[in-house]
Image 1 (cartoon, protein in one colour):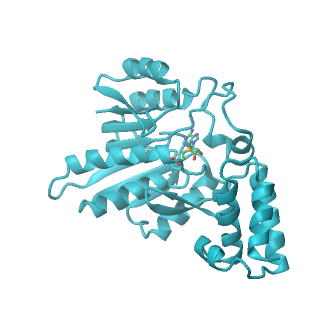
Image 2 (cartoon, rainbow, N blue to C red):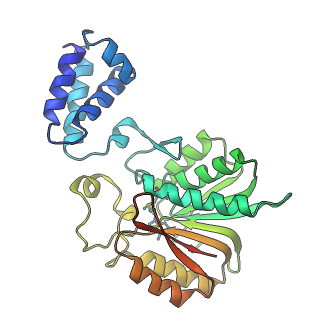
Length: 286
Ligand SMILES: C[S@@+](CC[C@H](N)C(=O)[O-])C[C@H]1O[C@@H](n2cnc3c(N)ncnc32)[C@H](O)[C@@H]1O
């Protein structure tokens, strides 16, 4: 079949999706190893049978809700490309706000010779620490060490691939920890960042595709969604782990509950900020 025929077939198959046309083009381009511009300028080119069959297989997976990033094996985040597969959550654009806020803090507090110590809890693909390291180095700064921890060993395998892809093994230490369990008592960090799972188990707001394909351990944060944050705040207190700034991501409708927790656990100042879509998204303790 020719490129234009396959694209037509793909768009029709995915017809109910808002992004049907774009998805079909991205998939076909991926299958034949070219970019989307190539498709447009080679509409009459024949696609071989094996590639056409693979294209159809992927169309079916997308239709069942599989994230495109898992098929392509990558996702762009903060202008960088990250390897992803079913072992990790697909990085979301709203999480870039955590990175931006972290970079604001690092840049504002950068002094000659200062080496920052950063902790990322629930690192998944490693997109947050790698983006922070990359962004800060672009701004002329230097981080001393970032500890990137996750409870999931399989997620950490993916984080290590990404850390190594960006040549950051010396700076970013990736290791297993149930929240702060493997952090030394009395340890001090300049900055702690976290995008812990925050979906309430009974909220029913997860789309079937996300629920089916993305790791459960990356999605749900107990009945109200804030269980893991609660547990981490308690661990900070119990272990005497210090920080100058903490930035965490949370979900739609959780502001009130979260503010209650922040007042209960912290004497420092804290605030809540909206993401680019105007939704309350991150808390900042400083
Ligand atoms: C919402 S995902 C975020 C992943 C990544 N930081 C990002 O922003 O794309 C949450 C991550 O927290 C990890 N996680 C879940 N429970 C945890 C725990 N008790 N301790 C440490 N990490 C945990 C999950 O494995 C998952 O990788």
